[in-house]
Length: 299
Ligand SMILES: Nc1ncnc2c1ncn2[C@@H]1O[C@H](COP(=O)(O)OP(=O)(O)OP(=O)(O)O)[C@@H](O)[C@H]1O
Image (cartoon, rainbow, N blue to C red; front, side, top):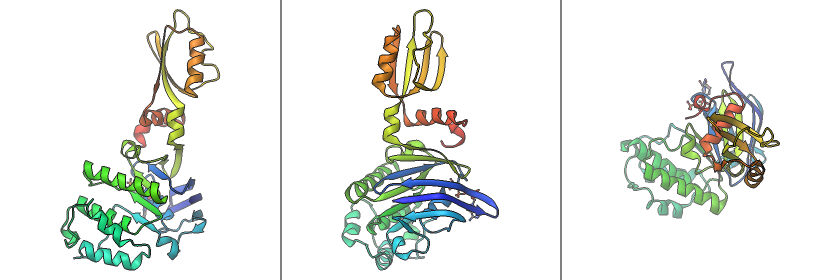
């Protein structure tokens, strides 16, 4: 479990992360979204024990991770700048990882050779960017980490490889309760993977959501009445957004679908539809609620 409490990080007096708190449960996949410079990498590096925060606490499994060799041997931080020894082959890097990570699993490494179409004796610096990223995943997953921190992990991977890697991640979460933190600019890219999403903006978490709750809780309704619109037809229901298109009104509402439906039906509409929202739509409306346009924060 990850607990971040009131964490702050400054660079030359500028607050890259401002008094931020979040919790990630074991076996969960947390997606951290935000635009360039939002503070994602800084936060991930503090959680991975690479940066030390200026104030606040970062705990992984109840322990401080910074300079904690034991915790770090079970943690992998995969950033956008991959590091491999000059001239090394995949096998040579695997030998190095094996010597550093006590939970290295050679059998897993061999198995993953069928997922990544790369020769183990090929020099990594001669590979394409996407192939190098595949090697990074191959090595990382073979260390059998308990915490995997991924900063923009899919950059450079083609669509097929993205899906293969996502499947591997989900498999590890399901089989051995791997915890994953993943940053991205793109909600669509991670929405099928994550169970929690947090949106970071100027060093602060603006919204954090459990996706299962979210998807079951927010709906789009379209409704029309003959004559006057009953003033009370949405009484007690939280309205996130409303729009009028002639006599048809569109509302984004939060609440239980059956309760909303029965309340609207009681007011005898001539037209009534209740539809689920995509995750992107949910965030668009929720962000408007806190006074931001989502386009300025994520893609
Ligand atoms: N080592 C550093 N020295 C000085 N400033 C830094 C350093 N690392 C990050 N910053 C600053 O901290 C802020 C947050 O940067 P960070 O890399 O965490 O953002 P990000 O959300 O990961 O952005 P991107 O999506 O562009 O990768 C930025 O203003 C950046 O310039």
